[in-house]
Length: 346
Image 1 (cartoon, helix red, strand yellow):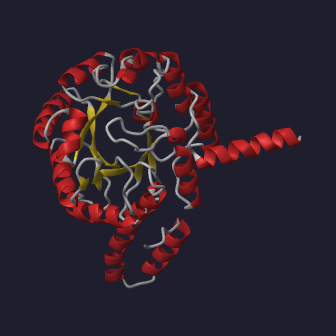
Image 2 (spheres, one colour):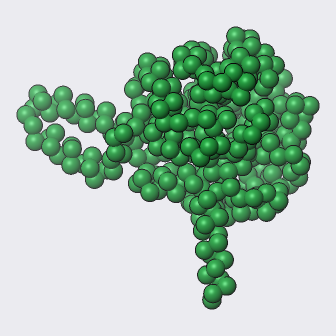
Image 3 (cartoon, rainbow, N blue to C red):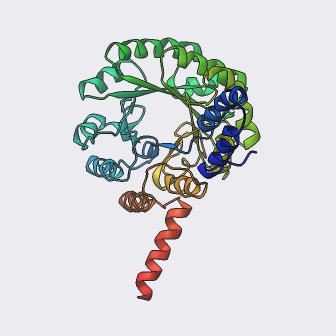
């Protein structure tokens, strides 16, 4: 894999380009712009802890805790925080207080608070409380689609078209999720061509971004690259700006897979503070990649996110304590233990 270049390296490349002749300089300047786009130094993090993270908790989390959780996340520098899900409480009891949660949080300028909606009813409920961005969710596996949203892949596209049409009429942004991009708990391996076909449909419906989910965490760099290679033709700019990656860390491969995707130009990643999450329809699936671990990795690569790692660690500690759950972030627990040791020592 190519090494991710910092801007000092890019400046050296540009200097060499400018040393060339006029005609060649024009041609190479185009290459320079493409290099800058492809190796963008900015990474957007989509925090999914309040929704994807909490939805798998067996004990109902108090509404006040959810609101406090989101408000604390809003102070970290995150620009996208998935707040809740407007799904029937019959399917996801944890999200039964969606209206109260969304109306209770402090909406900060410059931050998007998307919510998940499965159908038109969910969309209308979200619109009633002032939601400005929604997310739809499909699967690249027929079996998982039927288990998760109770319909076939083809039928799910029909449902999505109704949502995106009405959302467009109200200037509501729509993000799409594709679950099981490399593996399904019921069908096994998933073909990249199926992922590409579903992603193409999502983009045609008007979704501004498609999040590619390794729902049960069976992905490896080779498998992730196979999916991204299949998606190349769907990104007109060649920078994969239409796609995000959503990795679960079941087999400890999340950061490795994220690293492999950087070389394709992926610069948006979903994560969950303290590694919260799982999947209620995928037995044994562990949580999302921890936001703390992702931030530590990105910082080490010289990439920028605008998110304060220490503040995120504190939020991860807060929510883990509130719900009585082990903090799954390796970075978070390491730094918290170090701080505790220092306090005791002093």
